[in-house]
Image (cartoon, rainbow, N blue to C red):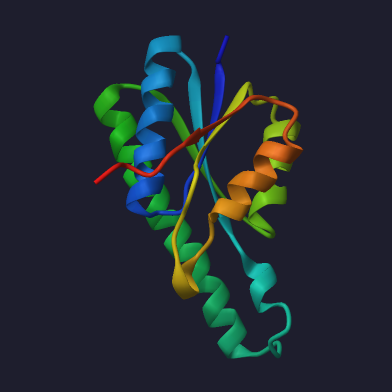
Amino acid sequence: MFEKILIATDGSEHGLRAAKVALELGKISGGMVTAIYVADTNRTSHLPDDMLLFSIRELLLKEGKEALKHVENAAKELGVAYEGVVVEGNPGSEIVNYAKSNGMDIIIIGAVGRTGLDKFLLGSVAEKVVRSSRVPVLTIPREQT
């Protein structure tokens, strides 16, 4: 049933927790897990087009690759088929668009994400994905402490 699983991650501990759920589902179903990290470059669109903007964009993309590396390592440990992708744009929209255009069977996303200047996956992103997606969305709540 879930052969193509999309996990939206932001590199946070909570995002990695959601990724582990996706990887376990991939292991059980024998499916392929794709992790997506959306670098929210829309937040920089109002800045002047200069080296500072270029540096910020490059930093966002580097953070995305690092976040995906953690998911990749977890996938290898579990023996799950995996691929990672970094895209740029509005996180909620890009996650839904990627799922649609790549025929994903389910999206797994953390219910909350990072906070402060680094935020990429927020509760509002999860809500947008849930409301906009045409495939099932599994939201992973914050771990109880």
